[in-house]
Length: 69
Image (tube, rainbow, N blue to C red):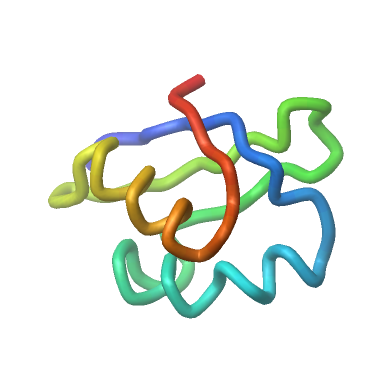
């Protein structure tokens, strides 16, 4: 399984709640997390099948900014 990391603007519980359905659908529940304590709000995704581009597209569609860390 590969680990992908991204800088985001997902910075609170409400933001995480907003992006959860999208990321659960793409990566699967339990395969991603956002470190809101980190100044860069690091999103970590563990997946064998997702590409960085797919994660970026999913998060942007949910209304957040994202870039590879």
